Length: 401
Image: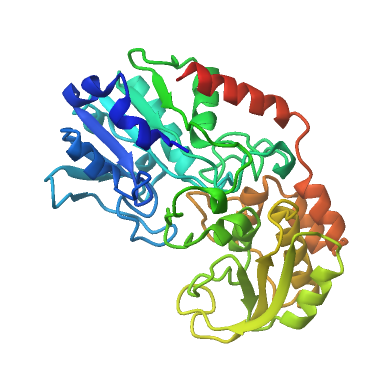
């Protein structure tokens, strides 16, 4: 497999990159097959970026979720590091002043295949701002660690009024596309030129990789793209596990297995595990456990809950599994369970669970005490139109190559 960064030394555009006033949008997982970071790959090629941009969690990946990141200076090169994750929604896009310093933006961000993983939206916002400023964009694509199989798609696109930074455009929860395909799709729809043209988008595709392949099958280690995405097991559960952020259950932050571990001080893990086993959902075992988070929700308190162990990634459906888990947890202790109402990813008028699921339907059904399995199957049902959108996205990525 050859990812976009692996192919950088052989690109026909390399001389143009060398001579450009270059900006780079990257994070800790922006590494090649030898685990060399893009900054050092560029240095070996004689390229000195004017600016670095960092997405949520920062260019160095040190910040926790939803923590505002300040700009800094790269100690090795002296180049500025501009944060694209601040206190306001406007902070998510490169400013006109920063873009005036460059004429080419190189993007290399690893995604994990769920619409609420924000890096793809940072890439899209950067492209829009760059296009408006007359800056050309080269995106180095990477494979989706949880695969691009059509049968793995889960969830409909968001209902009107439910777009946000955890879903800037209408996309299923588990979308089965790459960053390059998603960004090219929306670029084409918005009239941004595709290919090696001025002020357009050029995507360097992944070569010699099976679309359905998972990260465990790659010819290289998985590098954590954010602090709570440490392993391929985490990526497999994340399209469901992130839904827990919209509740007062701990999603396992502050433990060594975030998103796999879920619970609360008042939760009976043994009962929850038994109820999940009774659903007939495939590909996992929910193991009851107790745990004590070191930070965030229920920090320092002993929680009951489960750890979701994926036994068959091909049949496991994370969205359905965690929707059922949420509904069972509500049924167990409705007086203790709570859906989050605090500000979430720049939105304070819509509950986080609704932003994550894409409508209010799942939350209202859970609160009404409807059957957990029925809720899970309904909300996770794939959007029938998405197969055609996937073909459109692949065609757009090819046109951008």
